[in-house]
Amino acid sequence: MTTLPDFDEVIDRIGTHSVKWDCMEEIYGVSPQEGISMWVADMDFRPPQVVAEALQTMLSQGIFGYWGDNRAYHAAIQWWMANRHGWTVEPEWIFTTHGLVNGTALCLDAFTQPGDGVVLMSPVYHAFARVIRASGRKVVECPLKLVEGRYEMDFDAWDAQMDGSAKMMILCSPHNPGGRVWTKAELEATAAFAKRHNLVLVSDEIHHDLVMPGHKHIPMAVAAPDQPLVMMTATSKTFNIAGGHSGNVIIADPELRAKFAGSMAAMGISANSFGLAMSTAAYSPEGAAWVDALVAYIDGNRKVFDETVNTIPGLKSMDLQSTYLAWVDFSGTGMATEEFIARVEKGAKVAANHGATFGLGGESYLRFNLATPRARVVEAAQRLKAAFADLQ
Image (cartoon, rainbow, N blue to C red; front, side):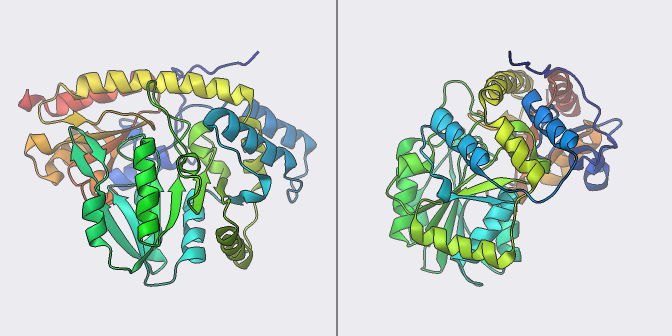
């Protein structure tokens, strides 16, 4: 029988080397003793029990040498992708990286040269632009359109932007920070856009298991099976095991696979044994039951957060189709960015990601992590209401 966690349990993470809690005051000026941490995208929940049992087995064995024999690990990935996403993966397609930011950096090394452009649909996960610039490549921002409160793709405008300097495109699917689950038609159009402009298409699907009821994620590899493609997936967001620093770059195309293998070899990348053990355990029927319960809980958190935040004049929380990250627009307040941020951080004592870090179109937003016990989500929403009480 699968034991499901009590997601309402408040776990004190202060002093545990948690970036989310122990670095909050340094970065945001919000004390962890008084504040609520809603920025870094990890969860304040324990992973499935089966993950803890896998680590306990390693501890009991007591020797922590180099990892070998990936058959069970690959089989777990194959099982998960087939059963949860309808996607058939072959073992030889799988590369294991130190998380997907590392996977992104390896893709840049394998498929681009310094000075090349890399296309992002902005606003989008901020680490993409950071790694692109650090590698000496150029960020090519293709702004998403805001249509009736949700993001949509704008291929006509993006076609006009292309000048031939871009060599790679990174798709965030589902989208972070907007929470969009892209439709099959949108995915097919993205693949066609990449083909028109000779772009290596990299699809980061790290949030693909965290999809709200009524929506369905389609892997890009399923939507556009004939497109040469790099898929990036991980257990880290799904099961809250980002500290294991394990991600997968999955490449069916032989030519792209050979190039990526060359970069992996040149950099001496090998996997973290603890991350592999946790991932193998998580991709299981027990892990699947845990994820189903998690998504239902996050959906409840989404509802209670939006019910309060959307009553605050000038604030609008984007409808969350996927992820556990609420994307809240403050433009209706008429306030300068510095003012609404100060009200959130100094008034409400809530730490949230600044929207401008996600690129063009994010300037009036803050991103709030809802993967925390519901009482804390309710408290954060009430604090925001109080911080903007003069508008009501």
